[in-house]
Length: 631
Image 1 (cartoon, one colour):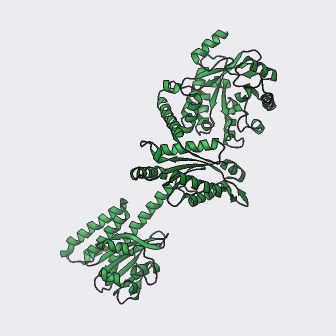
Image 2 (cartoon, rainbow, N blue to C red; image 1 turned 60 degrees about the vertical axis):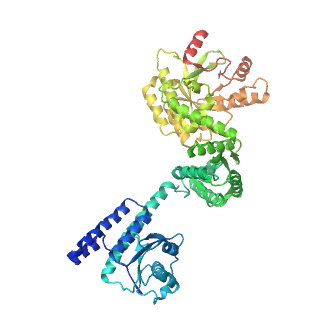
Image 3 (tube, one colour; image 1 turned 180 degrees about the vertical axis):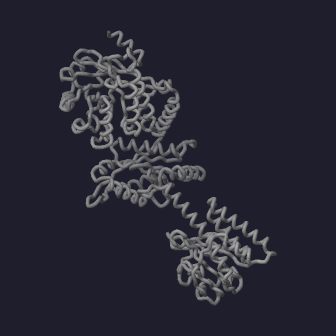
């Protein structure tokens, strides 16, 4: 046995040297070997499968050293074993036998080479103690002499694998042999290092940096394969969508660093309870998707075990925190054959939203009714996206806001309607909900704002002297481009700015100290007015009114409906009005349908109201006729 270091020479230099040293009669063979080397380098450069590149290198080495059989093994740090790489003329049975070899001080020449990270030469395997446990293998594959060289990473000197060369006779390594072996080892190292770099790059592209779970790209790549396999083989496939219920509160309380730690801990629990075969991905923020090759019943059991585990609390610093989540589960086998993987995730997301709206901390499983509703909503989303290709896709409707004291019209709320005949039959609330879910709300909202500014800019025009309230969703508000869009309209139509009021619905995202609060203050600085819609039904509190620059609050119709008959509703209306006035804001009562409701609200001190008592929402032409008739 001989053990020594392994040198590395520039690629191409070895073969060029032998072109000089060999006799002219052998130049044809050398040219062939140069062609083979170019072929190997081409495989490496075009990211061919690693086994293909390593097998080509093994064949290349065998062509230069007659009688030798080449074997390249990859080092797998995770398992601590040498794994299948590339082989020349050795049969597949040899590859299977040595796959998984554990390095050690007496593990043949390759195992010992990996153990010592040095070249090992066994001139006669039957005389070398390193091979005592492998004599049967040597006889089976006619191995008498073995040379093994470590494959070293150029970047950090770490072990990449081992190049083994086996001879049918006793053979020492000459200086020329050593130069060749170094060259072949260098090529093999290049191939493995390139493969590892590509694998690391692919991993970074398909995995979440924070949790190390898969990301949406991994779902996009692997999900359809899982679905196709389940459909073709008749196997189970269930998709779960998880949304943490209280993550924002935890983030706000403990800070983003602890919030990130919480997400890491949740990811660990997901791995623990989802099973070894599940595909787990962080979908975004505090949302996760898990793909199971199991039935829905088994998935529900796993999710309940996860729920119990999270209920036992996760420690953030020295404080225990209970984590709750809402989940939606879909049995992909029950879906239509034409449903793609993205649609199945969408339905699971829809079920998770339903679980959260029902109180959270629960799992909702899609059934036939839910599937039908999802398909209708998906069709609606497609219809809206198609309709928005037309420049006149939206038809604004207007509902008057009147003075309770005089009955005079003060302004109008501008409401979204779609021109498409099929979409016009869908309730506006459904359209808005789907638009927010799909992101179409940004385009719809932008067009509504442009329409409002352009309409008020007509002087004289149909709405001269009135102001317009335009609804803005929180999702639209949080779009990075929204403020720039508003600034552009303000610069284009400066004269109408004081007559535009943006209505924003109550939401947990209206944090006075967060980005939404800053954005509202920026909008207010441009001269526009702001109204808080549906006040009293959501997350708003007195601190909202004190800290956010609203001019008006709109009292939700839920309290107005019974104001003349229910003392509790009357008391709430009084309290909400007092809150608004204490903060210097006016109040508008929404949903007023009867004269008696209007009379009671006026007695309570309300100045303005809107509702069917005066008019339903109307298109512009009907609004003009209605105004003319009142005059």
